[in-house]
Length: 282
Image 1 (cartoon, rainbow, N blue to C red):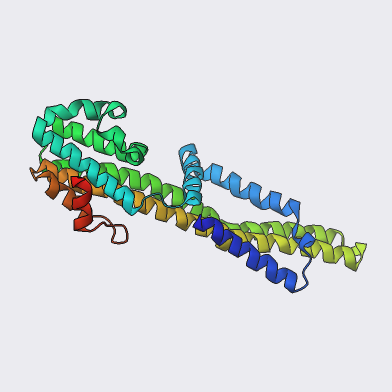
Image 2 (cartoon, one colour):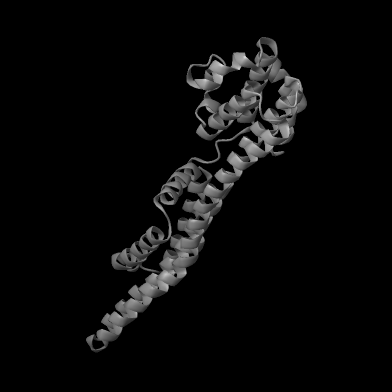
């Protein structure tokens, strides 16, 4: 939601100032400039990146528009889930976890925590890692390295998405200049058409430069940064799972294991010790 508010402020300030300065809004509607800049940007992105990165950009933009879905309540739910799973394993034995991690959608424990169950990466990380713990053949320090490998691969994929959008953002001013140069070529071809025609063509050409700079610094760049923050919060959520499971694998009690997870939560979303204690006991 915040990204939408920001975009409204950008366009309201820009267009409002332009109109107050007696600018004609119709002059900015140069559809051919839009076609050149948009087409070149999309085409260059298709040339430079594989399809999964393109899909990642679209998905990242949708997530950025919705805003960060990781909240303090999300972390409390995660800690409660892990506490319940760990307590269940301590009480019933590790092997009793097998049906829960093999088929989490039908798990009487995991299915209760809907926000977590709808988080694909978190669900896969938790269940796959607990399957390794159930096998009993991986020491705790190796388990930590295994999870780190998984998170590093995911982080690299997310980095490719933001890097691709940032690359396009950096290219927009240059693409705008290309559109403006084409407009100048048209202007020089109509130099004998009179001052009015030349002025209109120059104005259209300058719209290309204006649009390229606006798209770079006012839209694409900020969206790329917003997607980066979404990915950051998702990675911290997964890191909380990692910290708790590694501690549990080392033999820590359930309450101690989730405390390791709680300490890994960013301060702005971290529940207090008392809040966590009340939540898991409830």
